Image (cartoon, rainbow, N blue to C red):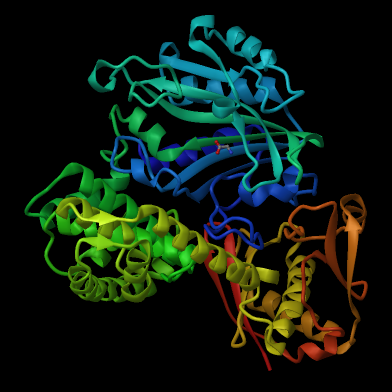
Length: 580
Ligand code: GLY
């Protein structure tokens, strides 16, 4: 079975069970300043897990691009990734444990044909960390009914069987995880599912999201019981193809064979790191993240630079990273159109970054040599800040040469720097605008009118999946299955301009969630999911969740013109527009 077969089989299976297929959201979470990347399929759905009505209904399914960097040090082993694709199905206050678990089991054993004797499961066994939530014996009983014997059911604590929230607050709950016994274990070690000895691979996770973690750390019941599931494409594919690792699947074969050709000193672990990191970088660049020294850009830069360093260990000569990216674009182009749309930009950024890093290495090494045998934490930080010389490389060199270094002082410097950049980020992402100049604020109000106008002309299946507003242009992403016609786009433009001319008042209100829902507010943004949500109303035309800022009256927006409409990925469209 290929990755494409697996994705299709999964989507079709859940579509038959009444689920609507929704597109993958961007790796950059829309309007959520609390986290850097989309780390799970549920992330873009948080408002709906909290109770907002999803335009596609109560049963959803998709394949979501995800990025997690917390396991970055494990990348290179058999199963860990930074970027990965997650298959997910959701019940938003609809079906519950019985259906969720039975369908997972049916899909694994009937559709994928996995041997049920090799499936073990873990369930939430209760934990004082989550007071008031009892052990999930209901799930145990369902597993037993399906034929999983007691000895392959593990009751574990919240460390293993509690999922979420994504940030500090939000929907979460106990989960039940499915593991496949690969038969092998490293060096004959014995372990249970959830312990990393190579024997059990986690393939799927059904989360029963009926709690909301509040700011003060309490777990309160949500108004609705949700199911949120997550299954990693790479891992399941590895298992289905009879591999003991993800790198022998076709998702990596093109890139790894090129790395093999380019490397005169091939080492499996470094090659895997190069492949993993450049795959992640390619997808991040396609989602418009640019390498920089803070936040998202810093993560991207770190991935690229780590890949280059491992490329050096493989003794690859000259610039190589955009060549590897090209292989990934080829591998994924049918599923993720954005890769081909932005391929030129991806190559250009990678080449630029590779050149910069070579320079940084040369000048950083020269400075490093000058430092002598007692290196302070500030020195390490200065090498990083002034020359872009990676701290991990300094630490490697220091260890090699037996030089002493003040690690603690470096950690303190780094912490101070992170606090400064976090404060910077909050400013950067307030309201999802690139800046707060008058023209971007006008653009922001225009996106609300555009959102509603699209829904009027194309129907309620349209909802915003992203936006980016700069003084030069408005970029607006939305879900829609077909290509809108020229006439429809013209109509949308007319409606927006008509509402601008009416000089409607733009009003902010802070409401309870229920009040906002009653008003039919659209959009994804909730002010950090606090008690009150912030909405903006434009006359009686549009009501949208939003943190602002906006113009006071629509006539201040100016004339609105659509300059381009295109597809960004399956079921996802993008409009570029300008204000005149
Ligand atoms: N949201 C479920 C998971 O990531 O496993």
